[in-house]
Length: 142
Image (cartoon, rainbow, N blue to C red; front, side, top):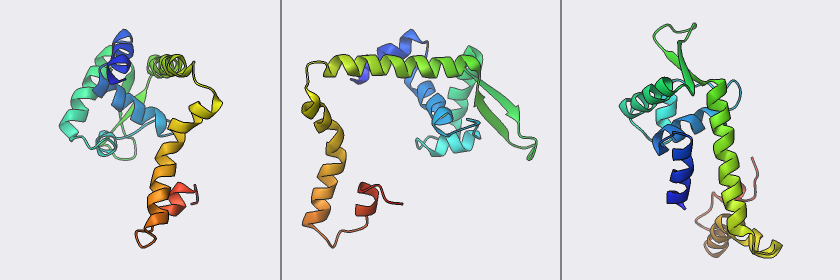
């Protein structure tokens, strides 16, 4: 799967690391802007690694880097219109790929893989009540 996703990203002129940085911007919510250190914290990268990825994205056009008006020491990274289009194109490609993978499965079979990340930990919690703490997350409670 990772090879297929990598090929899709390559058609968009993105490397996996650049995709991860762009993804962090897009999933953060409007206005889709983060400081480089925040981008680094999310996937557990070093600031230097994020700087390299952001520099590549800047050169290719999917992101901007501007001074933070509230703290002139910081910079803010945000997607450009081209970056938003790349994000949407990548998501559409992934969706099409995943749909093609699942095309021969009926509804019950399609539900099975998506439910496993919740069902299996819930079973562990049920079998070991003293482990506790995750049930609220698994049940979607705040």
